[in-house]
Every structure is written in C-alpha cells, then in structure tokens.
Image 1: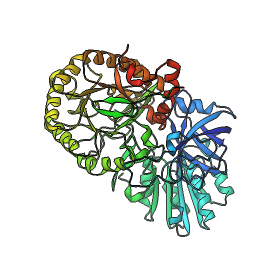
Image 2: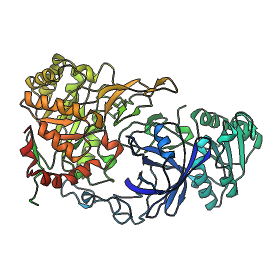
Image 3: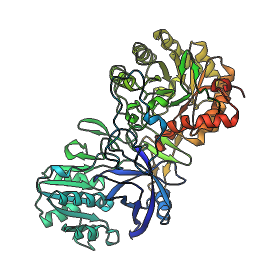
Image 4: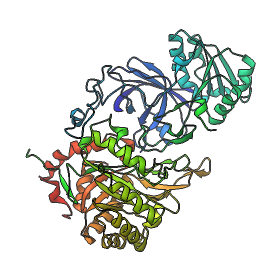
Length: 287
Length: 305
C-alpha cells in the first residue's frame, strides 16, 4: 500500500447529506470497481474508507454521506484542499517513480540474510490502485444486474463502465428511502445502463424494496452484483438464484489487513473485509 | 553529522534500533511486507496468539476517539501451531530483526504451553507474555491485575522457556503498576513491556448503543502517551530488568522521550493503524533528531531522566 496526496477538484452536495468528491493527483490512477481508498481527515484519528465510484486517468470520484463528525468536516473542505489517501500499490513495494508517492529509503534495501526469496520487483505499471478486492466483471457472461441501496450505488458506476468496456450489458436497480436521496441515476443512464428505482415511500419508481423493483422489472441477467445495507443484500441473495457478488461494509481500523478490526465469519473462515474483501461471493457470506 | 548509533541491547539481543511495532497493530509482519522493507525495524511484536485458533469478538471492533481509538478484536489468531510452523518462519525469510511472539492464554498451563512452543521455534527471538488483554473475558487482563497472578504466570512461563528472553506485557488498568512489575521480576521475568490498552468505551448517541459490539475495548493512541510514559518511568526506576515502552508513540520525539524515561526499546501501536508507514518514518527521522539533541547513541539515553 502507499500514501498519496490528492487535491480536491470539487466537493458538491448531490442529494440529501450526500456529496460527490472529485480528487486529482500527480500520477496515473488505476482503481478497480469495488475497491476503496482510506482518507485521512484532518483532526480525526482513523482514516475513512470510501469506495471508489469512478476512476479518472489521474483522479478519483467518490461519493460519501455525512453520517458523523469526520464526514461533516470532509463536506466542508474546499476545492484545492489536499487530502492524504492510503491506496494500493499494484504489485511489489512502494513505487519509486509514481509522483506524489512517498518512498522510504528502507524500501529499496534488500535484506542481507535470512533471504530465500528475491526482493519484490518494482512495479512496471506505476499506477496507484485501490485497497481491497473488488468486483469481478470478467465473471459475468453477458448480462449483469447491479443492485444498489443508497450510496451502495456508487461503486456500481465504475463496475458498469468495466462491464460495458468488456462488451457486456448491465441493468441497475437502485433503492433509496426517499426521492431526495437519489443519486447516480443520471450518470448510469448516461452510460446507457437502464436504471430501475425503488423508494420506500413510493415517491419515485417502485414503492418498496429493490427486490420489489427487480420483480417488477424482470431483468435478464446471468450474474448480479450488490452493494448496500446488509438486510437489503441478504434479501437480494435470498431472492436471486444467479451467481452474485456482495460488497460488505465494516467499521475498519487500518483498512489494509493487519489490525483484524473488520473481520467477519464467512463460509471459508474468518475474513478481513478490508483486505480479503470488501467484495465476496454471495455463498461466502454468513447472513 | 556524526554517524548515529541507533542500536540498543535488549537481554542480549542487539536491535538495529529501538523501534518495534506493537502486538496487534502489525499483524504477523507479512501483511506489511510490500509496504516497506521491514528490516528498518528493530523488532516486530506479532499478533497475540493463543493455543487454539480464535475468531475473536463480533464487529464493530473499532471505535474512533479524540487522539486515539478503541479496539475490541478479542485475540483473533490462528493458534500457536500456525505461529510457530507458518507465520514466524515466513517472516524470518524476509526479516532479520528481532521477532517477538506475543503469547496469551486462558490458564497458567496454557501460557506455559504456548511459551514453550514459542521457545522451541528457531524463528522467534523473544517471548512477550500478554497478561493484559482487556478484550477477552476470563483471560488476559485477569492475570495481570494483581501481583500474585502475574507472578504465577511468570513463574510457569519461566519454567517452560529455557532459551529466550521472557517479557511480561502489563496492563495499565491497575492501581499500583510497580508492585505488579516487581512481582514479575521476582518471578523470573527478563523484561517488562508496558502499557497495554486502557479499558475504554464509546456510545453512539444517535443509536443509543455502545459503538463497540462488546461494549468496551482497549483505548490507545496519542492520548495515552503521558500515562504510558509515567508508568514506564515508574517501572524502569523500580525494577532492574529492561522495559519496552509502549503507548501513544507516534513520532521520533516520543521514542526519545520514552527512552529517557527508561525504555530500552519502544513499541508503536495504534499509530500504525492510521499510518502504516509510521515505524519506517520514525526510524528515518531518528538520526537527525538525535543530532539536534546532541545524542550520538540511543543506548546512552536510556533512563537518564
């Protein structure tokens, strides 16, 4: 992993308590859908893990909801402000040639003894990546169903772009509590992705849950991908027989796999949401 | 600038520098092997290990605080056999500094057994006995909160460990830390690590529930540094065995301060979670700081205040 400085290009409210944050950095960025970055918010001890909604050649688009003091501070940060992100290195140790990446002298030294494996090679692709393991668009045969609840829609946008780039089709079903929380619908439609909406109060789209909207729309799909509240994803996995992937959320400590603060029990044993996930096959999740 | 000597001698182990990531905040080291060269670290204290594998506590296990955090991981670990047969050997292949096994248990017998297994592992250099975990009911801290229990664990471990230094990691959740440290010394401990976390709690006022699923957890981070420093000072001056200072350390200045208080090595804990590179940054910053303070050898400043 690596620390990298980004600057805020824009930080705008797009729905109730919901902000769209565009960040730019000095080097190339290549994040996969479902991955996240861990943001250092000035004055707060732990970083805030936020999933990546879109990857720009030299930047990131993130959506976040103001749910506490840290995200409140983030929402007040002006364009031009610097943010330090913890992000991923694609392979090997910290990369020396990526602008904005801190490199420590120790990172280049090869251990002298006790070594029976070669030092990791410096990465060829000097791109900053995301943290964690994301979605697998390559496992979709032809038609994907993307199911988001609230801000769970955010990582599905990048996933939709990846699916379309692979020549596959995607349909989105997004659930929100009320109309004023709706976001990312226009962006997904602009990609050419049909979007079906469910709202709990029935103000927009199907009244009820995403499972109601899926039943109403009857989309064709061979694989589904979901991100949102746990009860929603549980209902989705119970309702759909197709293979699916689930993006879990947990309160994290390090965000990078070494504090074991976000471990969940899965079908294959204890797994860290930050480093083994956040995306898991639906069969792995023990509801 | 005169070449600075960062090395310290800890119970016969020569550490390249005093900086050691604290148990539970650095996994088994391997998790950070691609982040920086671990060989910049004087030692690494591995994740606390019990005899059997443990899942640990339910989530949420983490709560943020002002200048710190609470954790309630609950000793999630793969068990002592995985430590000695997989984790420690794998770390040894890429790391030449001191590998510290951090051992927990639910009975005096389990402590002794686990420490004996660690003693027999050639890839472990030092054994740190955790009698201070606040997150496991009827284990951990229960052994470290009165002198007699701490001494009984120390004595049993001492008999099981023939080759390696044994440090006892103490809890700050006590009235008289010195009496417990002295009891451990008298029972044969080679050194003392302190402090483990302080028992703490947060409540989500909107949900009207504790933030941590287990309600309480261990509080650590820069906020506890003065308290940790005070305890290091008291114990280092009351005992003749070396102390590894731990608690709230986040920068090179804190390392120097802990050493002046009496620490031979200094562990960095919670700060790793907000900055995974902090231990490398500290070792990088130490020579220039030593120069500005007129220090040529870190060994020379231990307990000088």
